[in-house]
Length: 115
Image 1 (cartoon, one colour):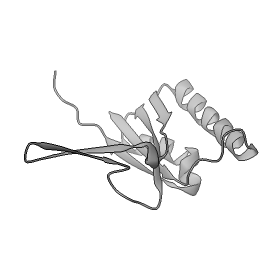
Image 2 (cartoon, one colour; image 1 turned 90 degrees about the horizontal axis):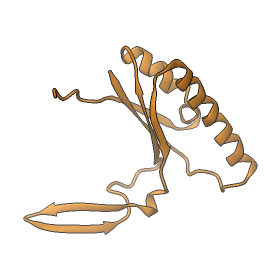
Image 3 (cartoon, one colour; image 1 turned 30 degrees about the vertical axis):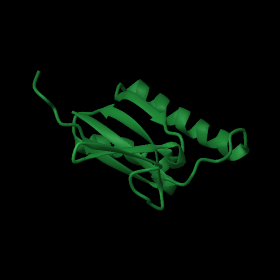
Image 4 (cartoon, one colour; image 1 turned 90 degrees about the vertical axis):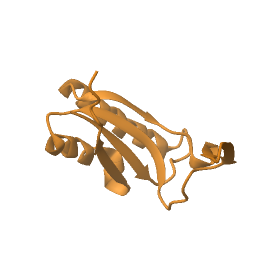
């Protein structure tokens, strides 16, 4: 079963700072463990919410606004896509991600659509 882990946390530290280097190291280590275990499919950080654009279509009209679809305290900062035997395994991997220590992670199973 594939699981998408949505990462919510504080804004990322400034690039090149000791805090940013430490965060990158911790993510590299987490990715390496998931890769060695064979569960990692993909993962990536996102630009900050201010870089987003929201699209809605209402009554046939496309409405485009700058910014995220929802204002929340914690930022949606990235994702990790894994494949595990079950939800319990996926939750163990989610708990091991750096974001779980100071933000939160949401784990969702992907819908398996028949071919």
